[in-house]
Image 1: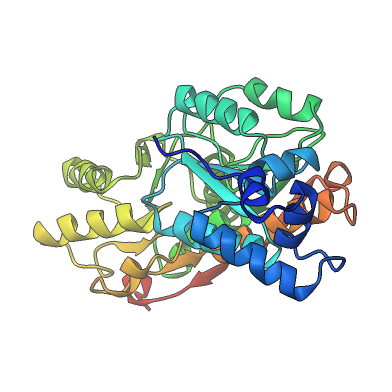
Image 2: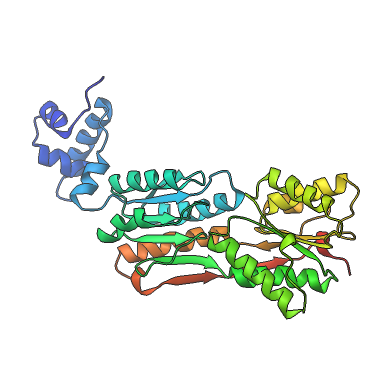
Length: 339
């Protein structure tokens, strides 16, 4: 393996002190421009690489932010990460991104890696099966700021960034009711997670406010995958009394279900009106176009990183801001319009 070039090697070649070389490479005003040019040219020719990590450690700051997400192959999460990258880069921070693959074991391993990498702060969206957040306690003890987004957990020392999922679930269900639906199926994800539990709560509240009875046979808990959409369609086909409305908490799953329902001869929205969630691009290429809830992913990512950086810079305390709620919006399209 080729030896890593150091400032001492450059200093030896140029017969200068290591301190002079270090100042020149850091553009110190005390070093004249001619000396700086000689040193930077020699450094480039020798293949010198600045050891930013070691430098940052000396300053007790790595300028890196850790991010743990359930899955990277999610359109919503790609918007979140784009927002995070934008704000982090503008502020001179780098992101270390990992995915739990919906496994708490992997999430624990990711958290350990982030801790050992000495990230300045950590942003987390929890895995499906996370029951306890004890594996993040070491960050709190070390006063490393920890922020949960989208899929969150209550913690007195951490900030959460969410949308009002109860309201979003209510609006989606009420819209179907206003279109004349009286038997509405709800397809959702793991109810351990706040996002799915709260959307279910909103669905139930809308039914209750419109004097409709919740029917447990019309609740389907899945992993919200494409296959889950096919599974939901088969459940609908098998029911003697079929639903006339369908609220799915994920657009990909909703589109998959719609495709299968059309294959067996059901008309959308005439036979069954459909509402999805997230406003993924797929919602606008399916026929009919899918009514959905716009989830502000990029704004959530931007807000998460900005909050964390503000905390690190001392302009905001994350321990005094427990929950930030972003606005979502019902996007009405042809898949639900029966009137």
